[in-house]
Length: 194
Image (cartoon, rainbow, N blue to C red; front, side):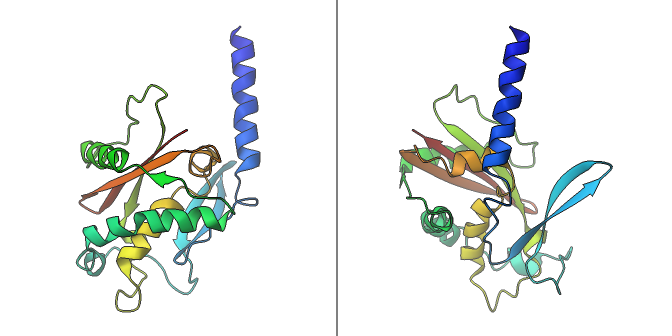
């Protein structure tokens, strides 16, 4: 029985990797690009500035001081719709109650290791962190940093087959998204249900 379960898990993992890899589902970000680097036989996707003449800086105060979290929140539904449109998919409706639950849960993760909630198959969940350092190459006088962050909320998960399977699931009926600010960035939580 264990062998059958192991085999099914491997097949599912391979199926997800084949279905949502960077070749079939590239990153459509306005500010980031992904570069896959191999170290000692292990491949890692790294987020880098889209403009290859720029780099990330450790000085992020200009980003942090320009952010209006209420505006970021107001852009999330639009950014999710644009994200799904990039892949030719319709956008499910936002469930405001679920979004509030996402926001509440993200607060419990501030300055902690990310740990999925105990959702017992009621919904699917993506958790991540947007570090302000990954936005330092941007000139806040030339971009709407609040819209950029809302877009990055979803771009963050590109390159991860399991997360992309959740974000791009064609059988979703409703979604919720929330975030909280921590010292050097944002904790993000996305949930969907069928």
